[in-house]
Image (cartoon, rainbow, N blue to C red):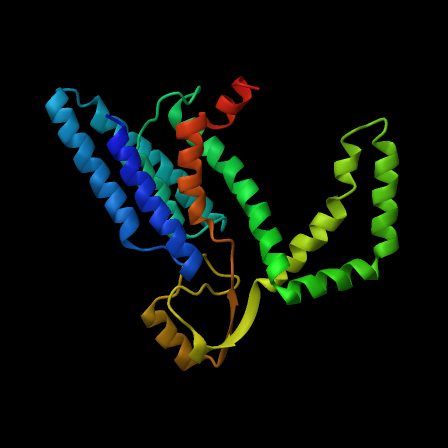
Length: 255
């Protein structure tokens, strides 16, 4: 019963994730497909089974996920496209078996975990591939290297008695690296170079549309755009993690 919605959800979100990596924008039709497929599938399934709890569960989970997604969008954690994809997942895949705790809570909790790990890997790879970010990080480090190294060595010695102090020793380095990456994700370009999907720095995380670009080209010569972490791929990763491993609680249960 759940296999068809799962496969459709996985396929659509995987396509959206790959498209986001390539273009930094969310394919607009994906959320609409997720929501329409979800409502149609569970309505027909409810008619056949004569049990409309399936359809109502789809509506409830979809609205819950959409509300959380829009809240994250309002707080500038991700873009509006990601918010609607999260809502679409709720409509099309309102539950999964073996999630150990109620599915909506389990999905959102595991989504946060996957997002955190994904973000760390993303910015590490970005820093490795981006020469400017590497050079700026080295400059920042050299400026106060004695302080950073002194703090790290002190924490390593203290970690003999308090283990977690070893990790704390790296926090200043992680902080300056994150700040360098954040700055490296902004760049000033000519408005003539703007493309659909670009996000203006300091504004809502919404890709520019054709009319907005035309207006900016009339009003300004330059704008600062913000390159963010391309999050959409976390959705299919979270789905696979939940389906095959039961999420973090499933992994913990077999350890």
